[in-house]
Length: 472
Ligand SMILES: [Zn+2]
Image (cartoon, rainbow, N blue to C red; front, side, top):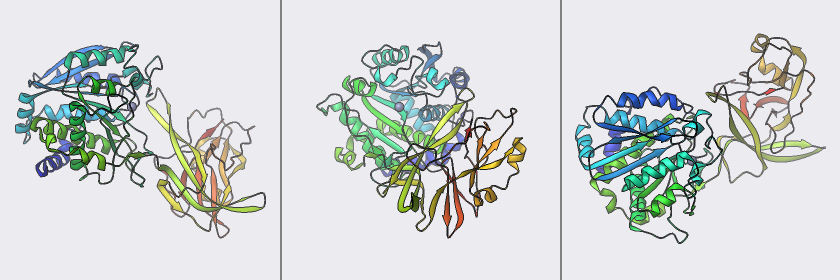
């Protein structure tokens, strides 16, 4: 175990040598990874074949490394908008492709195991950054019916390989916490059950032991940030079926990490988790793990919101009430899903003491009030760019009207919402399901504004990776 942790630290520090620099964010496409796979074909330590084609004709590849008897099979992104595992696979392929102080490890891997990678099982979903495939089927509910070409390809390769270990790579909501804590579940695991009786077969107990080993190794990097899913059998899911067929299957879900919107740190943790797994499998060190260690891993709980504002006084119909407000964000794709902006909603109002915010403000004694629309119109975006936003907040405004047919943007880059239809008179209420746009008053003066769910401190106006909305 100490040498496994030491190995993980070496990977951690050497990672910049291997990171695939062509993949820098989550919304890359099949056409971004095809040239990376083509380049691997020039190397003779990889065997590459086309495993099949997606419903829309995109290539799905199988990449083999190693000559050993024991087989390891990894597949990623069967949900098109869950790309962290795919990024990590290309980092690992780079790692396997070079000569350096890890050569002894590479030689051992190459001779003792054969590792099969199937990155981006759902390239059509990835193209528009959506979970489902082009026929709107969730591929991970198609393991029994096998109606999707992508599910069939995965199933065929699985049957051809009959691997000892399988890694099913996904992304999960960033709202998951590791237990009832404020810590995001950055990585979550599951050794999927193989039936409704939760039979503990030899292959499933090996998966449990390997997860236990990873939990101990990775807790050095992610203390309190590792969780597990409850074992609920899903007869239509691939992991559950593969487990039943004798492959020790591990579900690895990439979750949230503060200020890591593009999951680049989580990607690095995947890289370490998977290479550490290969080492544990080659050396069979996971066999020494107690099954009970798996029980110590906290469950995924959904206790996190993007922003919580606590203890503000809400005046309504002449009476006061103290409230907490919980805000969550979703990403809205545009420009062929190459780009996105955020849209927030008020998730909950009331006592939110059992929840935690990535950003969490206790504004006891302050008063919350809805924001208004500035009465005068503007006629160009540069006029808005040059506005004194703090002054507008102080006068009670969170929205401006832009009367221009030149303006074609999807969202407001500024800490103010833009109304492009001058006839609209939107009113933002403070209630669940609404877009959070309001002002927070301290001793009679505006202290914070909340624009599309992003809180702005008027004494220190920071506006990066944030956006207002367009109302048209
Ligand atoms: Zn998924």
